[in-house]
Image 1 (cartoon, helix red, strand yellow):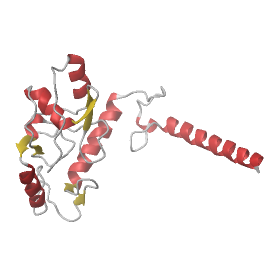
Image 2 (cartoon, one colour):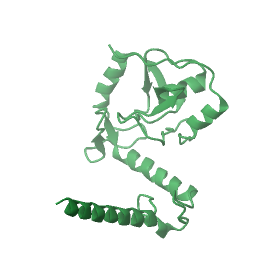
Image 3 (cartoon, helix red, strand yellow):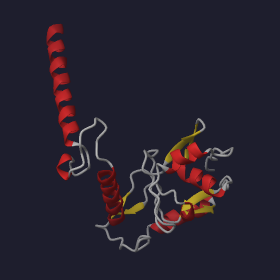
Image 4 (cartoon, one colour):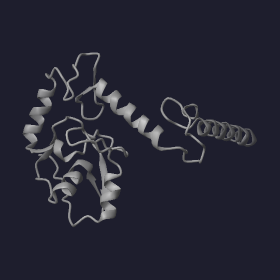
Length: 198
């Protein structure tokens, strides 16, 4: 018997709605809306609301429809656990969801139409489902492009508006240099302290 999810209670404030939806890359109603904040480590997004940790897709359902999702499993029709698009969520029994997961092994194409060949799939490390490599690369590149386009300075205030200021992952090169220097200094101090103790 699956563990019952924590029920959501009360009317969300505008601030709470803004905080939630700011962590979502909202596209049109047919696209996946990926969760851009940290996930729960099991392939599904988590969101803390009123001192309780909830699955983000269940919160999206609650915020969108104004009612708690049924006690049944909320199934992702897109098979992407980090998607919180309410149009991609369907109530389903636990047994039905498990059967669907079993059927996923025999699909030939993903929901975006990419062929699920051996070279174009990988197994998700937490929920053990087959994932499309092409879809994953598209999502990652969109996330990196969005980060590069919208942010002109890094957290430490360095100018990152020009392409040479960031590495392939979109991280600030100046910050990387500073972090590496800090690590070298720390190692040097640690070695000196170790010598003193000997």
